[in-house]
Image 1 (cartoon, rainbow, N blue to C red):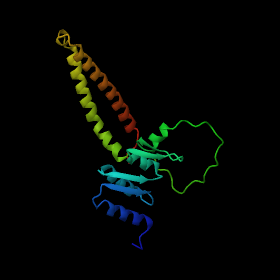
Image 2 (image 1 turned 45 degrees about the horizontal axis):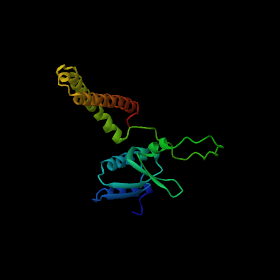
Image 3 (image 1 turned 135 degrees about the vertical axis):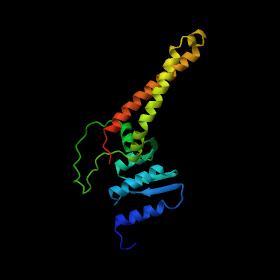
Image 4 (image 1 turned 90 degrees about the vertical axis):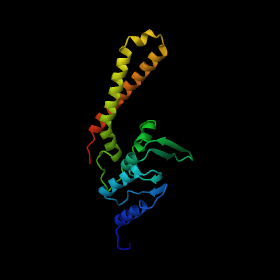
Amino acid sequence: MKVLSGGEKNRLLLAKLFTKPANLLILDEPTNDLDMETLDLLEELLLDYRGTVLLVSHDRSFLNNVVTSSLVFDGSGTIDEIIGGYDDWLKLQPQAAPSVKKPKAPPSAKKARPRRLSFKEKHELEELPKRIEELESEQAELHAKLADPNIYKDGDGSLITALQDRLQTIENDLEEAYLRWDELEKIPES
């Protein structure tokens, strides 16, 4: 272990970590010194992991691709939990008024990675057509039920209202699914 580089040591520790059964992982800057291939593998392993993961990372892309909720420490002793990663937290922040410009930090040696589909997003993109097909099928069934004149003869308005409510929900879900599909299609795969 003494002759391994920092990245090789990290890869070895990660390999050991996922070979032992555990229901809690605590990771401090797990992406440091990892190459892209190992980083992608780590993302996949964490997405498939069934336990709880507590992690600290400055890699915003990694956080956005992996975390499902975040604990945010605001500096005044308050800790808030939000659903999602860094970008989700950023959306919840009020827009700050323009202030005095801060001096720019010197460019770091690390270049920002281009945005690409995460493992979770790839899976979502593969499943969206099936989900849309199911919604469209149910939508057609509801249209057929609502077009049947017999449903209106019973005088049961609650059934009609329930069908119309479900139809509206499906139409909203379809619109969201199409928008998400379009959004994911625009992101290049790795």
